[in-house]
Each structure stands twice: as C-alpha cells, then as structure tokens.
Image (cartoon, rainbow, N blue to C red; front, top):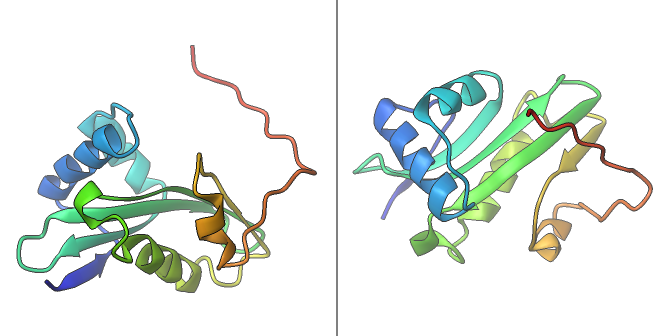
Length: 134
C-alpha cells in the first residue's frame, strides 16, 4: 500500500472527507461547506496512491507568521494506529506557511498525549471563548 500526501482535494475526495467527518468526528458536513472550508485553510491530506481514496486529513488556519491553529487531525478507522496521524502532523509542522509561525495551537477532543511528541502541551493559562452561529 502506497500513500500520497496531497494539499488539494478532488470532488471524489470531498465525498471521502464528508465521510471522515461523519464517521470519525461524528459531524455532518455538506459538500458545499467543505469546499468553502478547504478554500480558506492550509489542507494536508493523505490518500491511497492507487485508488485516490482520502484516508487522512487535517487543516490549519494561519497568518503565516504569528499564529496558526491546527484542526481536525483524523484518519479513516481502518488506518488508525498505522502512522497516518503522525504523517499528517509531521507534514503540517514542515509546511512552508507553518514551520516559522511563532505560536501554533491545536484543537483536540482527546488523545492529548499523542500530540506531546511534537511539543504540544495543555495550556491552562488561556481561556477559549466561543460564539456559535444561531
């Protein structure tokens, strides 16, 4: 099995991404919303070379110098525990728009210890405030 890193998604891979959000993250996402989302983010994804099936994905919002936030690091359930998350994180932190950023934040719901190998730590000094669209 050969895997390929990509930064743009095909129409078929958008459907694969919608599947990942639903079955890995438990979130419903429309294809139209996903198109807008990836247009406004740095996208790092992994697909199977032969089938082009999207099996891993993450995204980053950044200004390229001071701040970046990593979101949605995820792998298809059949690839979890096989290094896909590690590949995504390594590629994100090497990306030209991210590697020199002063402060990189990471949003995660679980597996915090997984991210510690890249130097991420729980930050108890910052309060995250959220406004939700009604």
